[in-house]
Image (cartoon, rainbow, N blue to C red; front, top):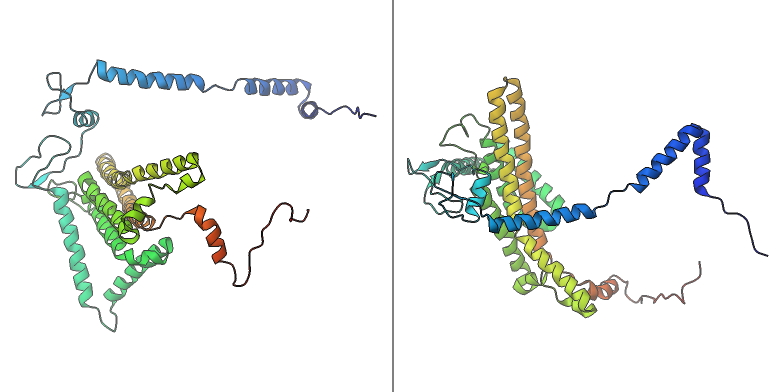
Length: 370
């Protein structure tokens, strides 16, 4: 005999429950609206076609109708040949060029990437910040004694707090990089806060160092050199490059090897994005905060700018902390050796077994039925 019990339609049950709750008229309208929504799902294919056509059109327009060049006055001139990427950047926004403090009356040469022997206002203010840090360190270091003073207690409390914070993030291996972490943090923090002082950023001779993209790029390049040098010093050149150019995956097949090599090369290329993100994040936040504070101060009353200064005070602290944390974590990632999962899958398990015990081989046949 065959079981000819009729199957229950879950959709009809749902419709009956809906009719009982809403009534026959509302239930039919709701069912029709749900069906219309289910049938009217938008297709992404037209959007993809439009995106591809837009990219092709832009590339063709660039070659068929090249953009105009920019003269020394910063104005588009058809007689000036277009120079990429200098004119492309200058045509979209104006870079905040700092004022030249020395030589007096000197103007920077035109262009984006130039070499000019001069002292801009951001470097001059950065030197003042470094002098303040060195003087405070020297004064507090002279008061170090067996019986700690208030200044010594404050210095030790601040340094130990930052050191404990760094080790809580990176583990015991981060302890050796605490001086670099603290140095980056103090300079960037005081450089950020210098822009909140009266006169800094409002006079030509003084400007917050971190509001100049040249300074933030310099800090990012120092950090970039640091964690790559530390990676080579700890792992050796061959071991460090082996983290990116890994050929061990070919033991599992050509496809696995190509994928592993592609991922490693992609990670190697992403290493060069790190200084860009470090520098642009710091510069963008500090410079945008100065612009916003200046505009709000000129348009509003006293209370709103005071609240804005308090907010910038906190945001500047966070930006200094973020830059220092990323530098520390990138350094710890660089010194971490590459683990071969294929080789350590068996060796690592054997190392963690107690002496005299042998790991049993578990197979589908020897496993007890559930």
